[in-house]
Image (cartoon, rainbow, N blue to C red; front, side, top):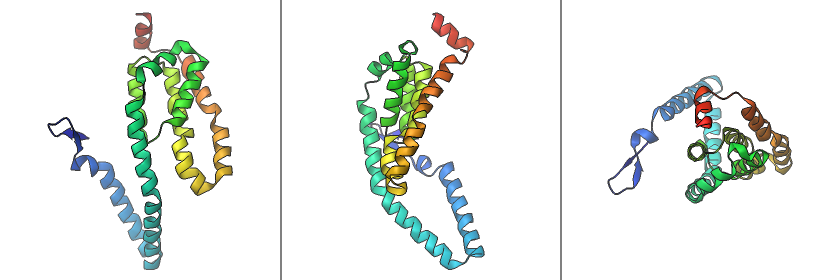
Length: 190
């Protein structure tokens, strides 16, 4: 995705920015826009584009701040200490910590999954990792504050958050009860 420029600084490549998913979404948008124009007419197409620009301008400052927050949080995260408190042996405490950290982790998959990988490599148990991913994906504070509250209102956001709160614990308990693979058993016995 990024290449080093020789100074230790990593830069995005054109291929990474305008790769396959960008081309696919652009093609899908163009086809959908053409269908909109042919079925409904030019006025609907212009209205859709205007609405899209308005939404983009609404999202851009929030997204920029969120990405900065994600970068700083990832740099500050004390991975080795977190892994100590969220080992498989830490029990329910590990699930609670993983859930709280998942809620507070800003950014999208490009932020959270590298954190999951680093935590896993540092010795975090699989049930806390499952609780973390479930918490991040269902109750991320950044999404609640930047998306749900402004677009859907406080009441909806609170109800959805409260309804989702048990999910990371349930997922973590299922992961804990799930049989270990042979390679996981060998690592645990070693």
